[in-house]
Image (tube, rainbow, N blue to C red; front, side, top):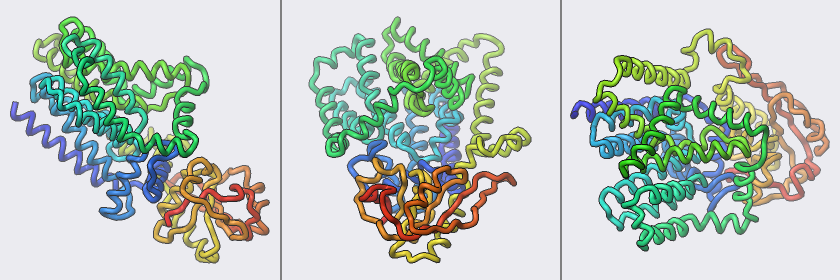
Length: 500
């Protein structure tokens, strides 16, 4: 079995080295640039999410510099840690180095987790602290060590500082304790409740921030997750389709089989390990399936459930291999893994799809979201050269566009604003911009330009900036020089959004 340990180490370091190389080759996507802006305005919490992603970006860009590499470095390190967790859990739960290796391999050939290993979002710290908290719970149950509840509580609190989805760890733990007869005893101990108190105290800054800002983040996320949007059945179908897409269709349905089997065998034999794997996987998938009947569910929301699902699938399939059931089992499994690996490769290098990718319309090519931002930053700096920088600000219709400009003009430290930034940026300070000049930047086709210009004494449209990718027009930016701002466009007191 030593060979599987060697294979695991080869997998771990080769994938990590690839990701360290790859993250330098892509411009920041709009959401990444937005979270970078958070890191330039550190706070107890933010309108959209808790603050951990901002702290990570701040730390690594402080350690290095404001570059795509250092903004994303924590994602690579988290994927490194997740691969180790998958290996250790698979190995220990099923007492097999082979299962540990295939648990780690499975996680890394899933397209969704591969994307998460290169793109920085609040899910980055979330999945790390989810995995760490689960590992501590496994060790606690395995060793019957009540003192492990304390580090578990700390990890749970840090997870809550990462993303609100971490709260799902609590019902998952409750499900496990109810299903496992030998572990129901923990309801009678004080340590689990003290762990909850620890987590609450760590999460308290987010509560304080929300209290001081009208509970805006809680209201926003609750409305986003439960507000009625579209047909229930259509939303459910879209949810299941998105999960099959980010996991890979064959592996997704194989995981469903593994999660159900874990529940059936675990409950029948009171196997605490299988009950653990079930409790932290299928209930999450089901929860978001039910949520999709009320609102649209984003593809990444159930991501935390697939770590344990991957381990369950690797372990239960290994048992089938040992029993040699069916002559087609090995070749079919190999085909499924290769298919998922190819999907992951195409996600990173879509041009390898050849004609199929060339035929993809530019407006639906996801890589176009990553293109053109450095060029836009250069053009905005050029336009600003012809303005009085001390009395000129930049503004855009949306915060994502403002964030990209902020990152790719960061050496100049311009004041930058977004028309939809009231709830997002008002908390970062306010400044009155009336009588100043401005540079307005938008994507072509924006239909409110005339209304925008009515708030200035005069304006001048610059030539369009066309961004091409693979010989196709990816997007077009339009830029205006605007003079003598009357006020009233962003509010009497403007929502301040800059890096100064």
